[in-house]
Length: 65
Image (cartoon, rainbow, N blue to C red):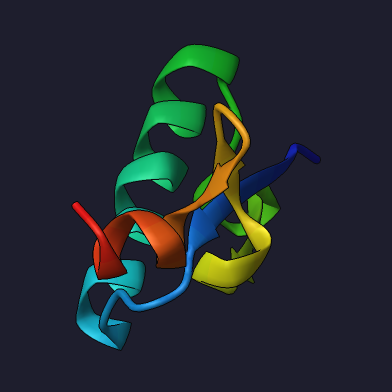
């Protein structure tokens, strides 16, 4: 039973996340030869203030592009 975890920035809609769940599940079914019912997907959303690139948070990057 595959468990697939994705860490993303918060802010995406529930519709986008549902589409992601479906797409990732389909990839697992096709590549791992498992049934959709066996696939688990977890999204962990991180606040922009807690995600940094090159020492600068994404919140700061948005505030000062």
